[in-house]
Image (tube, rainbow over all chains, first blue to last red; front, top):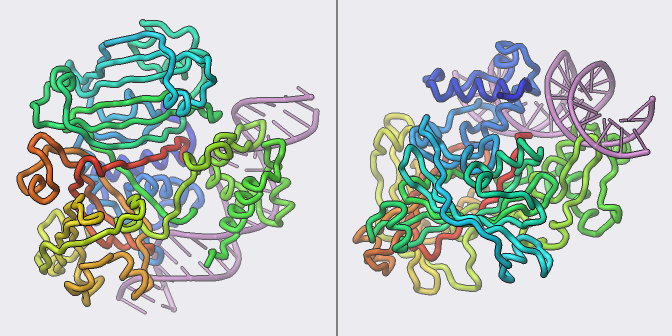
Length: 244
Length: 244
DNA sequence: CAGTGGTCTAGACCACTTT
DNA sequence: AAGTGGTCTAGACCACTGA
């Protein structure tokens, strides 16, 4: 499954080493040593390390070395949203071997309102699917997800397809990948529906993630609104300023 | 002010060309031509193009070329990556002309516990400032922020300094910039203190953002835990897959 | 001054798309 | 087959850190 690219293999190896606590000093070997040890060029080492740094797994100090971000190890044990090989829920949430489930709550075709039309760059006469699903881990509901997808992009969508991973369907059957997203993350008090579906107490909140997913050619593919049981929302974000 | 790095200059040049619509075919010259035209190596061209792609300005199709994302030109505000000069609260939150305020709740020096010591890469005998502040917009409290900063990085911190923007102080007085952060975003029911300070009802939640800020040389500078009035937490995130 | 990460180059070869 | 982006290498030189 994993790509056979050298830098990705090295990235995976190093990340696994870090998770397995094989660097007790919290410092990685220097780039030239890694290059020697894994028999790859230093450029390739840098590429793997840059990905780790982008993801917040390590941070680099010029003149000193490359260090493991302790927060990454700490959050590793928790269930969290991360940037994986796919942007969809099925791949983006840490599952720890738990089995993901989907319960279809609603599936219909509607005319989008102006806001949705704008967000998905639709023409006035375009229609969209409205797909409301309950997401589970091992029978435990953790998220209510409402998605809107333009009919013209996947006219053949069915209840069956929508009962599984739509992103995987796209990738497997239509060879299209979702590679970009713009999401807004916020929090809200839970509604009665949230409380019922997600087994929440009235004072317990939901995390809300809403935004647009894009295909790799830039087409806005889906507007999605996700309401998460608050204990399941752990979004890790690593921000770097400066263009590099 | 602009860095004199080759890849950054090329990035800026290309982006300006795109905005000035100098590529009416919506396609950039191929990498080898750009390399020739600007007298830089192809690797440097790729680096500049990768930044443009990360920011959603262009997308690349293997075998075809590099194309300008029409959505970038059409709706610049959606895609535009705001390179604020700073990562701090004062600069990162949308203020709409509202005046930010800071009320110092607590300021002392403590011995960090093991977890904090690990997160900030401290030695066993390092001490940290503990700074608890209430943040306001136009007298309206919206966030309780507790920060921990190693004494050794800014030994001269005072109540006066921490009553203002610490990040700005760093930049103006010590010429150091916070350029990287690693934050975990989550939501929680509000505590009694949250309800009091942020004027929340018992059923209303807080958004929690916690993590580490780094200086541009990679030094972990501050561990911060921010509890936000839920209506003020709106975190925008743009994710692009393809680790390059 | 030795060690370490950052930038940049020049070129080989591969994978995919278009003609 | 030609064109284009992707991967990977080997090495030079620079900038910063720390003993």
